[in-house]
Amino acid sequence: MIYMMANEEDTMIDEIITNDEVDEITRAEQLARAKISAKPLIDHLKDAVDTDEHGNIILLAKVGDKIIIERIASILTHKPWLDTKTYIITNVDRLTGDLILLDNDLHQQAGSNYIAGIKQGYRFKLPTSKGMSIGKRKRGRPRKNPTDAPELAKPVQLDAAGLPIVKKRGRPAGIKNRSKDVIHAEKRAKLDLRSKRKSKSKSKVKSKSK
Image (tube, rainbow, N blue to C red; front, side, top):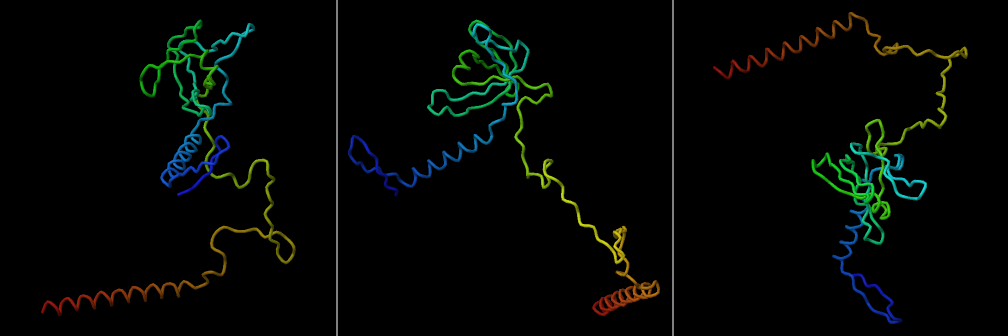
């Protein structure tokens, strides 16, 4: 068990936290980190909601357009991220800000309000023309040679005369300097050894059958 001290009205109160409660706190933190890491990046996209010259909140999209909505839990103090989804606008009430949307992933209707949503901290974005509705986070290992970093020149090998050595393709000279006669003789020896082994195995089978 872990004992913690809490100050309350200038009195010391012992608060006992069990190991199970600590595990639950750790598990909740891990889930929160995993959810934040899966949050799509939409900062580079254009805003779908703006204000006019009178300060009124206006929607820059129309019926039939796609819109990306990033929602947060506004009732919580730290306002955690809930989800980021792409919808198709099927109806707009520009007086109240009500939106009737179509969720293509779930094939069902959804609703939102861009006036109240902006005030609560929601973000409304317009998809790009390339068809990428939500920006992707770069994954994988970083490049060994980044574009900004200068490339290191490879050392050049020189011969005795000081000239660069040109590497030739194929097997380097001197690795296999056997003559053709020696190679043919080795092949014949291997074939003879195989034939002897086969004859021995056949003779053993005949002797067992008798």
